[in-house]
Image (tube, rainbow, N blue to C red):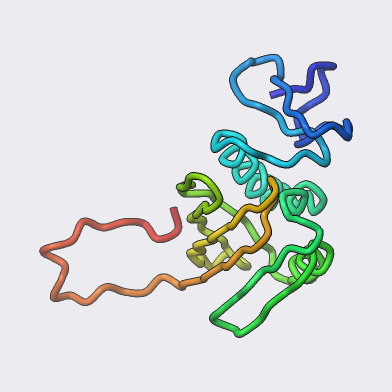
Amino acid sequence: MAWQDGRPDRGWSSSRSRSWTLGPSNRKPTPQKGAGVTTDLEKRRAIEQHWAASEAGDVELEHRLYAEDAILDYPQSGERFVGRSTIAEQRSGNPAQRHFRLRRVLGTGSVWVSECVITYDGAPSISVSIMEFGDGLVAHETQYFADPFEAPAARARLAQRLDPGS
């Protein structure tokens, strides 16, 4: 998708307005910089852009979805990060080569869940992210990580195989 002036779409436009505009395809809303998202469709698209920006290494766009005073919790490591800039700094400080593949996004209203495969130096980890919106931006995110594991042989006849990295 391209911006209305033909530039490739890299996220929100530079307008300070709190509105959304339709790009040339007239199919996907494109959030404008500083815009809070209010409809479910806008939230879904903003979350999809968040993960696409994570994959592209666009730190600014990746974190534009968060409120200035947003909270990010990693319950498994017992860490809490407070503030958009702190969240961005801790993520950009990860030395691993990372890739992100969004599996699905589910939600309505103020609570949204996304499931993503994140590879760290080639090793896949499955992430579930719970995002809570307030005033059109993510106010609180809780993210869980799980490494793939071998299923017990006793269940083999009952289960259909999934590729944990896809």
